[in-house]
Length: 357
Image (cartoon, rainbow, N blue to C red; front, side):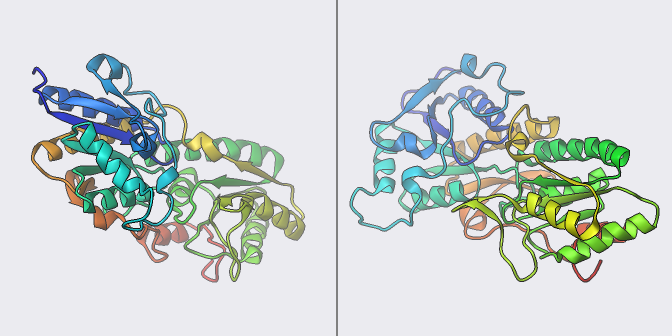
């Protein structure tokens, strides 16, 4: 369908990168083009709406081959000028500047792809009158309002594969292998990969751990004839009565190495640590994430086309729906300590470093 004058949709990616971002962009362009819209790709997240707008027109040729590609062709930033709390009437207000540029570009709608921080900025833009629709993205799967975020399944596969590989070397050397995975405030990656990979201990932010309980679990296995153990720990896991570990102000890191050192001292066993870090974010999205990303991108365009704004596309059961942006902002979706997943793990003998082990 030929593009009709004045029909434009913008799309941007913000926050941490995640497998599936390019698949969303591809779906946005292909769906919008089919409905007669021109698509402007805003570069470097919301920063592309500050000053002289930084964008490029995206055609079908620009998104060809993007479905399996990791990263984002539009690049991304973490909040930038939008990092502080929005104060109405403040001098050099980035939100007002962004609104002016949205109007200047003649956008009928703006699709923002990102996590809780991104959707909070999107909500504020909506309050100021911008026609916006959010798309949920985070490998941590901690965004409220949706059953699943794209990027999580790929990160889960990477973590599970790492556990599978660590099993063989741990068994060969009778070692304790500690795997640190991402998860600042929520333990979804650690919990799912720990169960899928057959780990012996899973430490998550939602259940503070006692290192002695973890050591007891390892020695219990030793007495039972299992001379190696796998411990999966989320980067935001905290010791009972303590706080999360930071490598620098605002930058989590170090819990895996600390636990490894402590377990070595208590158990006397050879303990080693592996930190997956950004390996979980990179690379090609899984088939599930490619499909989910495509569904999200198409649904976001269709929502704008139907006049729906101020909402986020979301997965509820088996369907893609839209939910108010407020549902995705202000709080995170965390693991419930008494959920069936945690109970399942405990039932098969997995320890969480607490009194219930």
